[in-house]
Image (cartoon, rainbow, N blue to C red; front, side, top):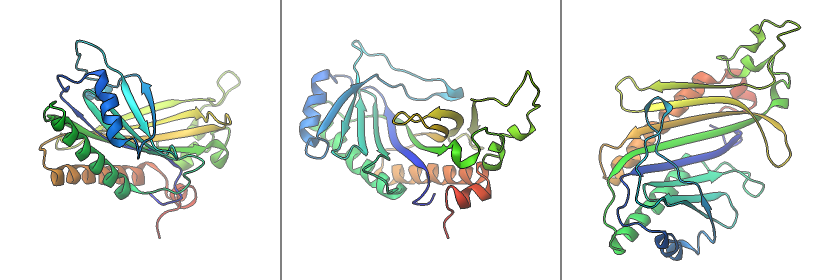
Length: 259
């Protein structure tokens, strides 16, 4: 994806067996370690790792702990932790107009993940047992860039041909829609969820089309280089799906294909 792509957010993360003795006080202790880089902090509802068929698998702990966001000053980088989840986000905002790219985000993730693992050991919480990794790309395209009435939606996303919608007085073109495609790798080594849906931008209520690619891959080892290889494979799969799901003309105009 080009630097001018309408990418709103990228997320790299891992799910692992719950850290047995992890308590709420540890959120503050870890923040002390990273506060210079992430001076902002807020609570969020806990997440559950994605399971097959779009479901979720969750590990219950005696006390339900929150998820905590650690945010940098520009609010374009976000580190999320909970007792069984660790994620790093890059998100575009008014102060972050340049797409930093996958390699930069992967570097941030590996650096912060290694720091978190070292901190767990230092705190006597032990080593984690990884379950899966995840990589997500979230794109947002203004409906004005395509067709506000969405009749030409298929020119951007060929799998959604609303131009063929049987328009009648009682059945006009839909104003909103949502669809999801679940794809399992041929070797069963991972799966991808591709979601297309209408949305509204909070800051100005602009109508949007949001397209997201979310890949989950079971972890097959703990070696840092192997983890990088698995993220690279997930990234390659998303790029392949992107090229197949988005029309050539849309990539050249809206996404500005690489030269």
